[in-house]
View 1 (cartoon, helix red, strand yellow):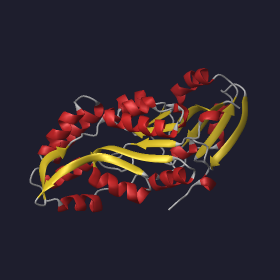
View 2 (view 1 turned 30 degrees about the vertical axis):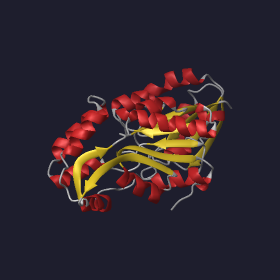
View 3 (view 1 turned 180 degrees about the horizontal axis):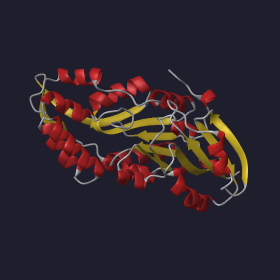
Length: 295
């Protein structure tokens, strides 16, 4: 059993059935086993046929389904390092856009954020431009944004706690701000967190970001740092993100995941998730519901 197709639907609205699974089983060469990881939510289909051919043949139809999928080698699925983006990946918002809302400039900032995430604008330049628009904001607004606007993606805690419990290193690296990464890491269990630091003087944001800037290069460097420190092969590394500044680390990981991502990031990834929650990353590694460490 060296090739694997995993089908994963949203646990909040499961869509997988035996009939759907059977329809893909008959199109795969040399199916040896079918194993449900979660009833109607996630299933493994093991087969002996050529992995690349199966991906080419089935992906056009799988892309139109109401569930996600991933092709992998069975002996390379368990990961020992996770490097994750934060905004719109581990949490449901872009923190800088929410801060901008309190400053009355959300529409302007959100448009810049979107363009940067699409890869149309330079990240560092646009970060500085957006933060400059927050100059004079009371620093207490950071607490309000965290309390009122920052919500975890479904499955975030289960993903991190389960990977931690199984000996993986979990690293949160964000082009967002350390005020939020530190709090999100604390509540989810990320062992390491990195982000940009907002300059605050006399209780107010100055409109500046303190160096060094955390960008796509920082994300890639962090992946390589922890990979080398642990002596890990590429296939034991998992990276997840949604925007253009996540592309280098997504490409460098043995398994690069684009999560509800912009087109450029989705194109760069091994697997694009558009329906499932973050527990999909556990199903892709072969964990079943019984293995999950929940809240």
